[in-house]
Image (cartoon, rainbow, N blue to C red):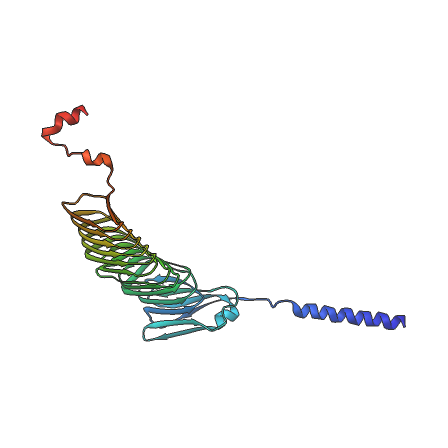
Length: 316
């Protein structure tokens, strides 16, 4: 009997050991592969993919890095000058797939997914961007941008924009920062979003805002036509405008820097602040609306230096 008990104990230990061995996770292998592709200038990506863009290469190629099973479930197809990248449902299991793209120049990028998108010193031609990405998108270089559509909870930063006419669409809780030299004639932010533009060069700019949208413009424009409502904030202090027509509603706030003619209307409990004294000014207020001069008090008494006041200026 003791021998049978010892044998049973040994069999039990072997069974438990086998169960523990089977319960161990499978070893995950990392895959890195490079593929030569037909010529393409447009990219459509969908899924959890980190994109790194490189332009100026005659022979397009794609370098992938990630778990072997995840990379195997990535669909790659080039059709009609467009590269399609799509991750199958349920993949990747752990981390996003890293994709480095090498191509001559870029004309179109459409990204629907979650991942980091970046590119430096990019060469583009009439670029069209569609971004729906909850992570960051950072592109720089010679961006000849034509169309920009940002959706969802995207974070987009573009540097080096050269655009004679930019069509912009922002939806959702997106944060967008644009820097360069661009003509942006129409800005519509009906509900939310955060937009910052540096280097605006436009003859006419129309702004329509609502909700909790936030807009900041810096540059030059001949005419500004703005309608701001809700709790929106329009910061035009660093936008040098010759003629402005601004109307605010609800609890909105607008700041201006007008050189020639200023026409303002503040309704409800909204406010309009101006930081320069234009040549002609027509400020209208209703309900609890206010149009306020935000110049420094001392600047009102400053005068240019002329031969007529040189003695006073020298004594002061």
